[in-house]
Length: 158
Image (cartoon, rainbow, N blue to C red; front, side, top):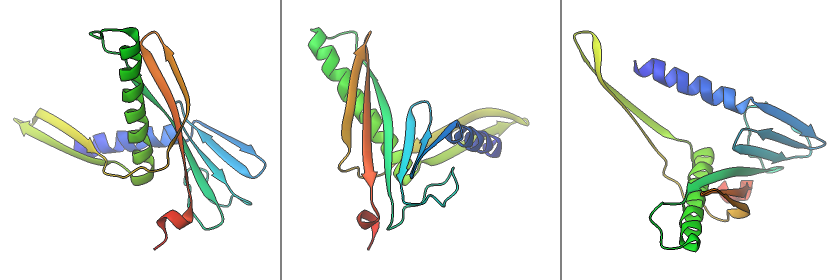
């Protein structure tokens, strides 16, 4: 059971990464429904599904975080502020997942050759710095924040 969940998660991630690829001169753009990766490079030589950070090119990661306004607020301004904060936190989490990856742990309890209980937990542990909010929209209680970060080789070189 663990392996089938892991395989379906892996396949769905691969399908999301291959949704749409656009090439524009020396910049390669990979876009997903809510996330896109942009590689600035004089010559893009790496495979389209895998982005490598080298000294010659920077990687720009752009994500869209979403937050919902709570129902029990005292004013529309408070609802907007809380939804925006939730959207920013979601965007930070998405950037951390892209840069550092996601730890996935699963456990199945089987009794009489049937799954009695199945649990999956995910976690991310990262420090995100220099992320910029590009755009904020608020419609019908949903706040969307587009955030981006540019990664350079010098940030990770030791």
